[in-house]
Image (cartoon, rainbow, N blue to C red; front, top):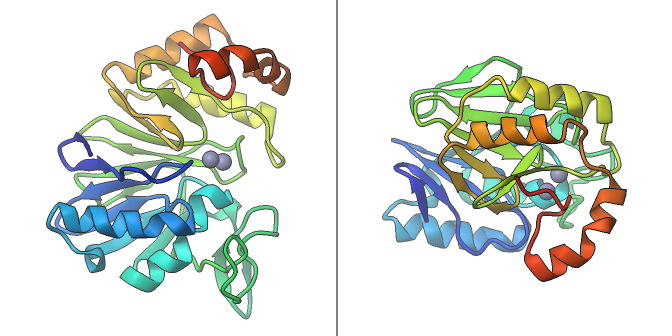
Length: 251
Ligand SMILES: [Zn+2]
Ligand SMILES: [Zn+2]
């Protein structure tokens, strides 16, 4: 489904979200899980394009629910993978690969989650990639060391990975996972609040259209401290009953 002209969410990918930027060539934001790849191909064909037009996959971070679809997508499309250095590892034999805690993305064997995913280009804070009028790279460490948000500047669309989420109407934050750094995360949120974005496309949940950066700043003003696992557990009943976010936040 098209969120704004030229920006699509691949429908029916389970668990994590995959987005498509439609330009002369095609760009994916994240790759999802291996069994979602057919859905990506089907959707691309449904809008009259072809998977071989996918040049680039922009990685918000290397968690396996966002990155384990990379090997099959590379095989089908030949796309180059772009990621921040802090969510990669490099060695003399294999070059640069996506990596989460040195465990995922470490073998050439065709095993989902463990299969090595080569990185074509390491991206840096402040870079503007030549995709649909310019995609700004904002390094937002915290959820993982190499987490990045991508801002489609002309359209005001932020692809936020697992740094912030929305449920279609409100904005929420991440809870700690192994590899999470709370101080980095807090600083990254403050930086992210300096940018203007109308539309928020998170790594989970539903895209939020309209006034997204204002809602995000309201959330930080109302609750400056990022949520904890305790907050998450406390909110469990409402989440089950009321479809709240993982952290229990909804702003
Ligand atoms: Zn994640
Ligand atoms: Zn995730």
